[in-house]
Length: 273
Image (cartoon, rainbow, N blue to C red; front, side, top):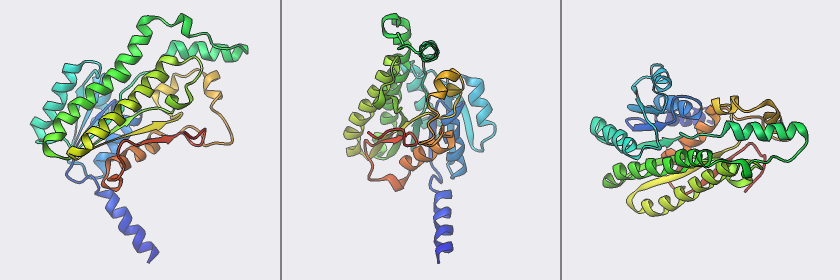
C-alpha cells in the first residue's frame, strides 16, 4: 500500500502543470533555468524563457520541449509589458509566472571579502555610488514591480494564475556591506506580499521563495573568502538550483492553494525568521 501511494503521488506530481502556459524570467541560468526545465518536465504545454542574455535563454530552451526564448531586461517596463502580452497573444493565457531575474554587486562582494581576509569590518556604504545603488534597485525591485504588474494584467481577467518571486534570505539577515542588495530584496518581499493581498480576491496567488546561498552563476562569482564564510558544518551546504526550483514549483502548484503572500525561507538552517 505504501508503494502504491508513493506511485500515485509521483504520478500526480508528474502532471501537476499539464496544459499550463508558463513564463520564467532570469531563465538563462541558475534557478530560472532549473524552474523552466522542471515546468516542462511536469507537463507544461508552453514555457517561455526570458532573460537579458538572449543566447543563454535560447541555449536552455533548446534542451526543453515546448519551450521558447525571448530577450528581456526586466528593468524596461515597456519590454516586460510587451513580452507578457506576446505570451497571452500566442498561447491565449498565462497560468504561471516565476520571476527569477535579479543581480548582485560584485564590487561590494569583493570589498566584503577583502575585509574578511584582512580581519577588518567592510566599508561599503560610504563608498557606494549612486550608479551601483540604482542598478541593484532598478533591476531587483523595479524589475519585480514591472513583472508583477504585467502578470496581474494577464491573469486577473481570467480569475486565475500563480506568480512566484525569487527573493533572498539577505532581506532578513541583511549582510554587513551589502545594504543595496538587502534593501532591494526586502522591498521585493514587501511588494510581493502587498500585491498578493490585493489580487487573491481575483483568483491570482503570489508567493516568494527566499533562498540562502545557492550554486548559481552569481554564487560562482562570489570571492572564495566570502564563500568560505557560508561553509558552516552545522547547516546544509549551498543549495542547488533544482532544490530552490522544487520550492518555487510547489508554490506555483495547486498543492499550495492556501499559501498567499508567503515568504518561504530556504537557507538550509542558517537562521530562522
